[in-house]
Length: 113
Length: 113
Image (cartoon, rainbow over all chains, first blue to last red; front, side):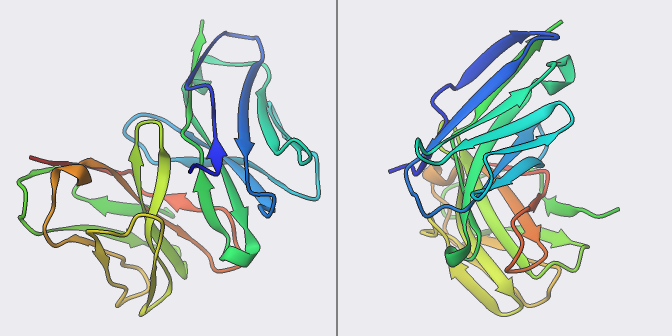
């Protein structure tokens, strides 16, 4: 059973608008969350992260929100740019498990010019 | 340039023919791991290594072997590949047990016929 789920396999958005990617998890023991971005024929690259003691972390155009009571996190990209077109993976980690990453299935984002 | 390299990038082989995918990192990272990416399932961990001569199973270790004789190298071995091991494979590394962010290689596309 997948502990981390991204229920939207794809998302299409107009350039300049907001992209919102969602991720749900089932294990309340996860204490750190990350988003990775992946272009075709490349490995995933780290984008942004958030600790479970926070509810928001911002880095430029990217903001991650964490709602622990709902076991839900989201990634906001504002404004979206064509170069943001990629697959985005959320991942969750637990210090007691050696910080092993558990990944969601990914969301493919297409930003239209 | 800090990087994780994998070879080969693409491989087509037949059932039962032993193969090795190499992985090397130049960041002096202690922790290395192997993942496979399958549609809708995200990245699943196959094996990981906390340091030289220390390896352990991840979530999907069946049919795979690894070794960690040197800090920089972490090869993935398929002794008798089967078609269900057709997948996209990623090697990753991070600094140590206390870190979260992992650096990924470019991936190896394996097809077993």
